[in-house]
Length: 261
Image 1 (tube, one colour):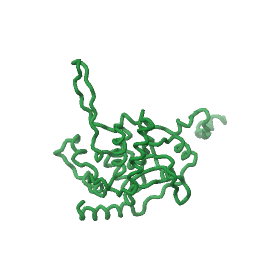
Image 2: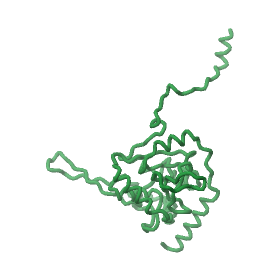
Image 3: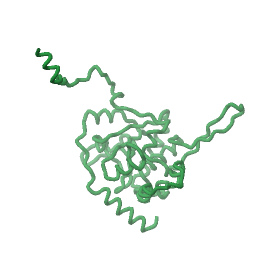
Image 4: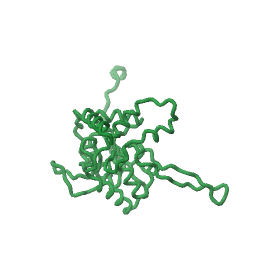
């Protein structure tokens, strides 16, 4: 990468990660439900709390600014003794393992690859674990800035390919790129390009999938993918609406007066 762009990328990262918002105290029961619902190979989407999170959500027109992969027990623990079960790429430190409680107070969504067998999940997890230590692709910062520049002459369908995220350097990665590469290694689709080929019968068409380049993926793509299901921890834990405790609301003033009369 051009040294000037790399210097600029580091400067921007230093600014947008300065004063990183601390998450609120997480609900331990909600965190336990989240932990129980996750399986290795699940993608955890996060709203995020940094300055850049709002920009990414705005530029990608999505609720989600970050993606991490649940890899399960790794035998590694945080300084507080929590198991490190998430693999993710952070701007300032690169590809690392993190505890689940890191995002316990943020809005999250579990996206599960449907019908992916144990062998496929192992391929996905091993691919990501093999990239630990990979640095964040600083060129992505420049690309995100370019999204702010209007391109009135370019159709919307072309813009994603024109502004491919990342430099393509195999020693660098961004959060969604790394996870997309992992599923590509398992030959599992996220949002492939579909080609329709005429079969033997004229009325029949066969779908031929082409893997989209990993640099074109964003966190929201795992949410809108037709091959990933949204898993809701509350429902997975056995939701019973009859067991809910509702607050007793005070009657309006008019009703209280009428009752008194």
